[in-house]
Image (cartoon, rainbow, N blue to C red; front, side, top):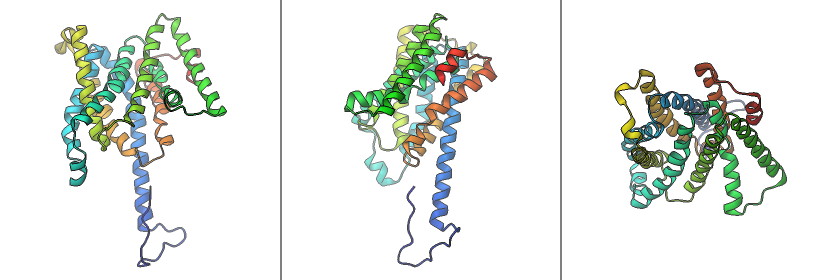
Length: 308
């Protein structure tokens, strides 16, 4: 965070060991950013447990589609009013921005999160979270392919180790007969990475909260269309959804989507991206702990090695 300087000598500099007003404000801003990142750690790590519980009550595409449509409907009017008048005038949801939001929303929420929601019907939530943690790996690979970025030897070795971990994880799952599901999660992670890279190149709204709301509306609508086409929508029995299913859906909509995306948007630009990206590695730890404690899930030795 940049700190404003005292101008014209109108205020004496703070003494050694004493925080001036601008330093104190900067410290509070840094603290708020770290608190928001901690919220992302916990909220997005907890969504794997909520998805697992929700999958038991609703078809996966219906669950994911409902989550994002409802979250988008709640967040969109709030996001439209965010920022000053000048920001709102220059950051309107035009047709080009809706098209960009739809493209990113399909990659992130339909191919990415939709694949995860489908996979959690068959795989433990902690294992799915570990496979999703390969997103930074795929982002590095995409940077190599799309921008011809040259990778130095240490980074190349890191990529190879990461790919080896994926191989160990998928190999361990193969013995359980769910290799195809594990591959689906890896593809979902790659789609999330592609959407993240694409989002930096398309004309999305400059306000992260507005971009998130538009992406959720577009992605959620596509998920519900897919649910209708696959017969999931007609098969959903809303009257038979237990209290645990409603609680899981409410968590996915409010803390998991609205608060999570808002906190993530707040962190961006306030902390280094290398620090922000650590959420991808902390989320699986939270997911594994919750899976073990709340669902009695077990992580095998080979899966633990692959995760490491």
